Amino acid sequence: MRLISAALLGAAATLPWLAHATTTIPDPTDAAASVPAIMVPSAFDGYRPYQDGEGPTWQQLNRAVMEKPMMKGGMKHGAMSATPVDSGDEAHLTHEESGK
Image (cartoon, rainbow, N blue to C red; front, side):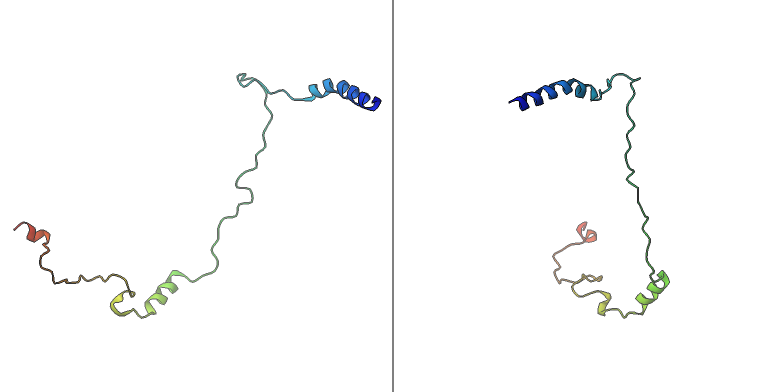
């Protein structure tokens, strides 16, 4: 019991000293109040710009594309063709015929 009482008495004696150790926050409305400097690391610390690796030049790429044979019709299978397909349905009118 004496040990607990001595510990409580010691804590009570140091409490005022700990209370004064806390920093006070300056009044936010006081323009002349000093504020601590804040050190924030830059988002660009350690930034390295992107660099392309060694690759072919655009001239080499153009030659490589021109040397490949084109597919039949010039388009891949399943793609829409560039030429219109006649459906055989004459019921559809064009803009020129709609005014007649």
